[in-house]
Image (tube, rainbow, N blue to C red; front, side, top):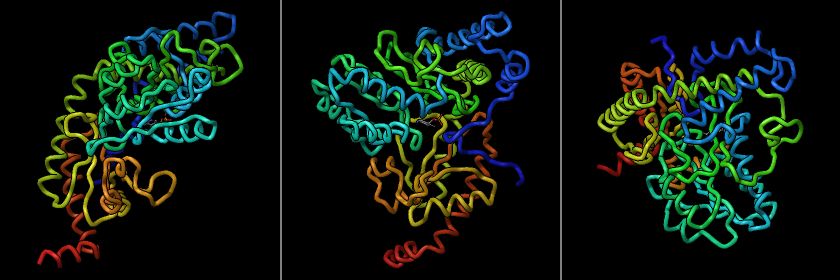
Length: 393
Ligand SMILES: *Cc1c(COP(=O)(O)O)cnc(C)c1O
């Protein structure tokens, strides 16, 4: 089979052709700086406001609560660092979870070096945060709770509304990294008591390098980039107009197609899970079966290495991701898989397959057929598997 099978949509997605089309005139025709006075350029100001409205509408927010950033990582950094600074007179304690994206975890480490104290909540074997532990972790000096909406590795969706209620009860700000959930799960910032929310364009068929941070009106947050008056003086820099237009288009598409698209993804996801569980022995589904992103499948296969699996899949033109050695090139298994209690050797044999809007059942049949063969071949070479078979006898 020649076709590329892309099942790494949690890493990034294909920019939709309509999104590219919407962006193009803003490079070549409407290239004016939105801060300029003349009409040709100033018209872009309204274009930007329109995109803010489109995004705000999908969240039950107001347009002046949407701040454009360069993506999910920046939004996460901004939410944490600026809140920490702005509220440090009230306290220096922040609560987060052990399974956050590194954009949150490494920012927390940075804040720890600056005198903030961070509580990292445990998750259960499905990856859901412990609400009782959250209640107990709250202190007089807690200023922020930051828990991701849905996990990027195992797809688990958190009880965000309940977390928001606990935050509100105690008068603590609540931030959520919704980079994976936005566009996949309906979100209402008022219902969930969310004060800040991070999202990113390239995870929902939009362009890379653009995202936003929702900041509820009234939240005291410091400016993140100092300079011009853009983004209500909080994030300076000439606006990425083509990116903003692309993001607006991507969000509009995702909101319009959400019900149908996610129903189809869920159907395909469950088909893939069912076939793998039936046809490949000694595997384990990671994450919750119900509270799960519609496009996420994550399995651990005993006796093999996720990295070898990826290389063999790549030879069959299948793009996937493993839960072990990630961008850092380290050989440690993923912090998420360890947090749900997987032993190192099982976590090492993990595979994440994330479906996209173009994924078909035929793609998945080809993937399962390939996977069966590859897993068997790798096991046949595995001393661990040999030992296991010997013990069985
Ligand atoms: C991808 C991702 C990010 C980072 O977003 P970028 O736009 O790539 O910076 C942050 N959090 C989660 C959960 C993600 O999946």
